[in-house]
Image (cartoon, rainbow, N blue to C red; front, side):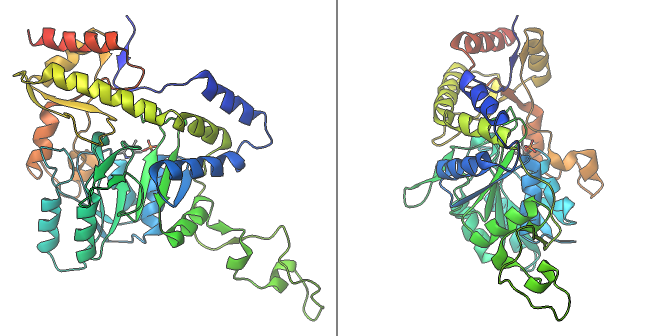
Length: 400
Ligand SMILES: *Cc1c(COP(=O)(O)O)cnc(C)c1O
């Protein structure tokens, strides 16, 4: 029997062709496919700028550096996310403060964040990292208002939600990563996400200064932009003292390392794949929404279901989560049928690494209770109607 995973990539002949063409071109990396992908992606989410990065985790790291996270800085995020959303703060010496999820949406609960902010002197916290978990867009208009009151930055972890949106107070659709509310947003192009490039990531923003900083940080802190140079032309040319300088220009070879950056670049052939995949992103979301509607209908009113992702406008359905009684039994039963459901996520604050900072069971009852029952069902555009029926039938069969 063919295995049915919880998520998987879809690679077409056109995708393969795009990669092969790039492999035959002059550039494997640092060529024209990168800017092309950045422009297409910025256009897709509606942001002014986009910076392609080697993966989503590196993208988060660069965001934390660009926003000046330093030793001891406190940053708030959700425990129901992939650990990378929190780890980026630790990379910079900061401290992660987890806040509860709303059990109805599985997203960071803004009221709990407000309580945290109100219970400490202004200036205690530096930023918030909300996550569009499962593909459901966070109401960033509300988070921006709160963040402004407390002078905080926002990094939107939109890895699950390219193409997702929420509707703001004026009735406008606000697409995830469009930069209207968050300072920076990040995406991942790991094969289980909506758009695959192998490994890969993207940062989007509407802030030109942050954009310029990120371009440098992505490649060792080096700039080749003459207007930014700090050393003199004399130094750059290598003229000896008293010799006459016969040029007004920095030489072609010249570049400056101006801050401590990294090699977090992505390759051209990955971007060729990303651009090719992006062309089908809307079709993919449409199919994901169909699959979600079918699950919703199938499990409506079923007493073994304690909760489910349900149908929410603008949801990008990276995951379709149900909260089930006897989750372990269901998980094992599905595995026997080659249906590989998955758990998203083990609460981050209870990972052994995070327990060293004092986090313990009982700290986040909503998140911990969610973890006891959550299971992500197969959800990807190429899941067939027959496969989904099979999954639904097996679940019904298990609960008899
Ligand atoms: C996948 C993911 C990341 C990390 O992305 P990588 O490209 O795998 O490094 C970060 N946050 C969330 C919510 C993710 O799902």
